[in-house]
Image 1 (cartoon, rainbow, N blue to C red):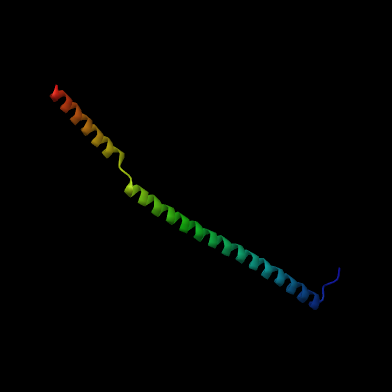
Image 2: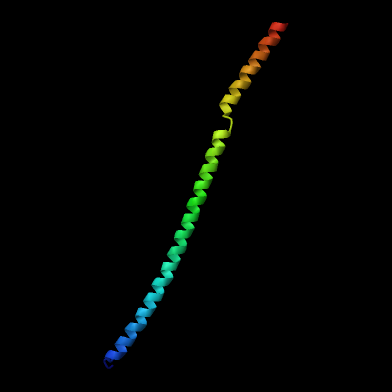
Length: 84
């Protein structure tokens, strides 16, 4: 096997450089897409958190409702007992 000429080495290095640049460009594009999708997911998550917080603030707390119903039931029972 003979040694390659300097022009063959330079040509092969230039081809390799082009392949590496194309690969980096493809990887860069893929990373940009992943970052964009991650940002969208973060915005959706923040929106869902805000909506969940709003729902939690406006809901009736179940123990309080049960306590009010129990007091009303006790009052009605006492009123019926006193009426007889």
